[in-house]
Length: 127
Image (cartoon, rainbow, N blue to C red; front, top):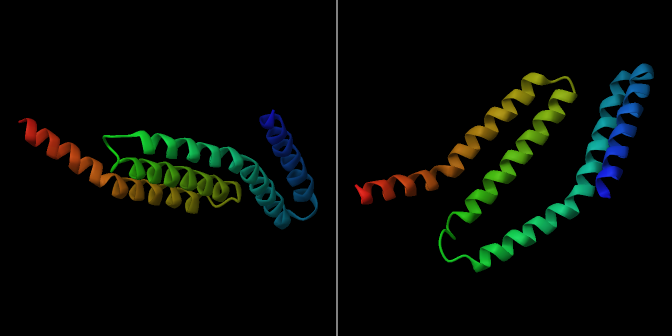
């Protein structure tokens, strides 16, 4: 099971970061960053499979094809903003992490505006 490997790497990274922090605190962020990158690369294979699955669903769709790419973009922005925010907070930069979260929310709202507009047009046509 891949999740066991990921948790082992995460625990090892936490232990290594704690040990390095005792000797060279400024280097511990690099240990954390390397651990995060390794975990992300391990999950990337699964993420590729998810996008292939979503691509197959997209090909079979007859209604809402215009909105599907928007939903995917929103999911990507949400994951990237969360990942970056957590990394900033782990580095002790909570203020930057908070601004990344805010920027992610703004971008998600911006990306979802065509869906909101379509819903409002649908409501107007019904009324």
